[in-house]
Image (tube, rainbow, N blue to C red; front, side, top):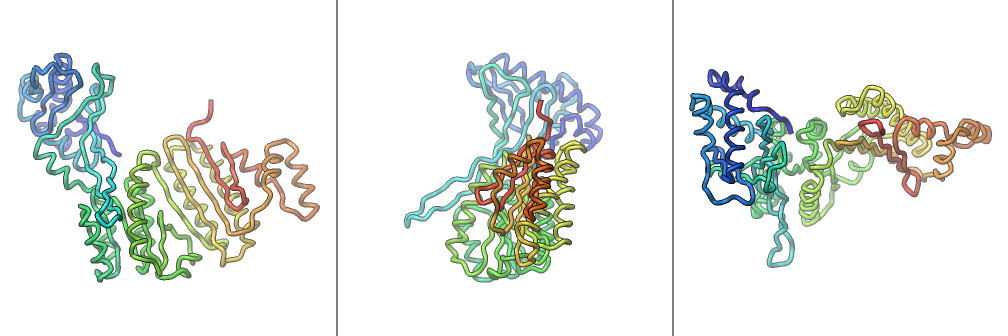
Length: 430
């Protein structure tokens, strides 16, 4: 989530912005004074801040006190209005030396219906205040002003996007289901219109029909953008064949349903994805699922795609080169040894980024192999000798595993041996 300081808001405040730094300092001073006196800190137009253990002495109008300190009530009001605007745009606003305001979302709730099935009700949005330094008494609570609370009730996080070729009976039934649970539904019959939506605001869930010829344009935009990468994406495919092996490198959904499927299955999948996202959105900074056919152009394209993701990951240049080399080796091994370069077999890639590490998972459709001894020998100095011996015997070598072990911080195969997980820490281990 983007962060901006109150002083930085001066550009959007006109003449009043000239005193932004003074206003920010005055507001901070007034809020700290209110806390010291065990009073609530009231900010008209924004809300009230309070700490546990207040003595009931009432509330201090910190806006009025700040206006008196800087001698300019208009500048204080302009600053508060700017904070509201930035918060509702999804940004964090920092009062330097005091703390950060941000909009947070509560988790969706499961509501049981009379007939037994469950209904996922939307998450509520709330403004939270995170102090820069621990405050005596514990957590700082924020209660928004009435008009701000009303705006929060319609915050963009409660919307669901349906991207479908036409608004037919199936779509209308979906709309009815989610609206019954309190969700705001937006249906798009053109990919470009849907793209404009995600560029201006984030939905809580996207259900996309793959019948659009350019549906991949939407998938890339949704999942590569950090602001929307954690939005759950369910893709509906016209058949098992269409879902089987993609003709080109394709971003796939967090869940994928090929026809035919039961309507209840889609609803249950949507509910599960909403709940999963609520659990994971604070963990992952980026998560992308990619499928590709086993051919050279596709392999090169997915390697290039992951390399570009690494460039924006926060990993240093040396780490990017190392992780790229390990990923290339993993994909080539999946194509050569797993899928035997059969184009009707797909390779699945998952890219995950969190605050500490990058994880790349590569899976092929081969029979796997006895990876334990290769990983063990690849981590020792006799790996080259062992690889030469295997090569002379016409068997799979182990130099690739040795390379990957040297280039990443952790390498792990699944039990079968057809799925490899590579992990690279963003910061070198001390």
